[in-house]
Image (cartoon, rainbow, N blue to C red; front, side):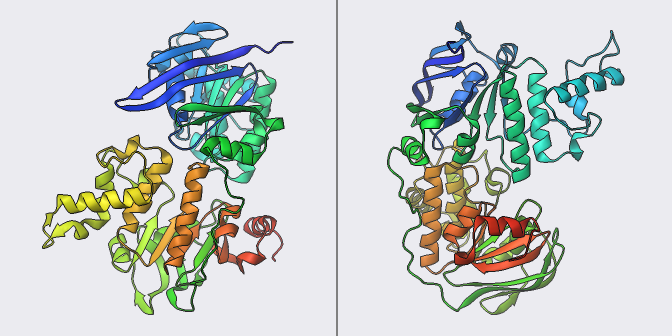
Amino acid sequence: MEKKVALEVKNIHKRYGGIRALKGVDLAVYEGEICGLVGENGAGKSTLIKILTGVEKKDEGDILLNGKSVQINDPLFAKMKGIAAIYQELSLIERLTVAQNIFLGHEPGNGMLGWRNDKELIKVTLKYLNKFCIDIDPRHMISDLGLGEKKVIEILKALSVDAQILLLDEPTSGMSRTEIESLFKIIGDLKQHNVTMIYISHHLEEIFKVCDRVSVLRDGQNAGVFDIENLDTPTLVQAMIGKKLEDDIRPSKKKLQTKRILLKIIDFLAEGMKAPISFTLHKGEILGITGIIGSGKSELGRSLFGTSKYISGEIKINGKTQNLATPEIARNNGIAYIPEDRKKEGLFLSHSVGDNLSVPNLDKMMIANTFIVKSKKKRLCENISEELHVVPLNLQMKARNLSGGNQQKVVIGKWLLSDPDILIMDEPTHGVDVGVKVEVFRLIESLANEGKGIILISSEFDEIRRLCDRIIVLRDGFIASEMSASQATNDKLLSIAIGGQAW
């Protein structure tokens, strides 16, 4: 039987001023298929999704649903046509129940009772949950659910208004491995119910695990369509970035790691941690801090930079005890911090790239500590933007309009301008494409070779093993194990992180 095309886009173009975001993109997705959509940051994935959901209007091209041409001019029309997007930022209302969220705005009930008919609402919701074998109490408040469960409820909310095409944008972002596996099971069940899905992810292993086919965008154009069963990772990566990726993305490292201790933590207890910890960071060393969600790794990073309070303990920098009570004190002591959430903690999204790069570095751009020299600001910001390959190179562009990878480069760039001795980097490759990830890896190596001390906080075991000299595994807010990178395997790190057998 010939497959039926549920969604097709032909020759889609989109411009933002002088920037061509999409240049004649084609895409066909079959009914009941899971089609991956991948590409580097800025490749055009988000723009295409915005067009399909009516958030943006195409300049040229055609969109066909079940073979019929449609004009999607607004989100309401897209919703009426059965298209729904599940974004990283959820749209659920925390103070309402599971049932109320799923059927919000179209609650089952009789006459004017509407949502007040709780029994009917619970009954219908239970039937809906059972249809997809989901074991969640419809009476539970959304605020009581884990992130994985919330993602599932977000999907059911879309399906409750007869969505037939789901656009899943980085659906596993921030989720634990257990939650991810549960979500994959739900996605598989949705496929069995003939729901069509476009799956967008930077995690290529997810693409291989859940998708039937994958479409690649590069620089706003089609770069290939592949059947998953006939595809390997190097071929997919080459299509994404336009060149072969070296097998070992870690450059040969000049061993600058010395016995000189840059940072020494003694009996340190931060908010969110359950036991005091102690460790050292040496000049030229990359120290990995890993663990699962709730291990305390991000709390540790924030407290060392003064954005969260620490309860007790001693911090020594270059042998001198310091009280890192505020980010300003930490910065003055040569510490920089790349936060996990770049949008909320790392950037002023409504301000320009130039302003974001300048914020921690105004002292370098002033005369007599009073007046900002615009030419100096421009030169410093352009130099670091060029060094980190920020695209487009436009200091006036609002930070919110950059792709995720380029936003991360700006966050890193503003701290490199301050020339720190110690960099705390919390999930620095989270939500960036494989090309940017390689750039970040090489930058970390380069900084270590210059003698910087790097604390790399990451839940990606491959990343930790590839880059780090030593690895500390946190579990429930205490150090569960410490080892050299050569001693680590993914299974070993996971076993320790979840409380399995000690190694």
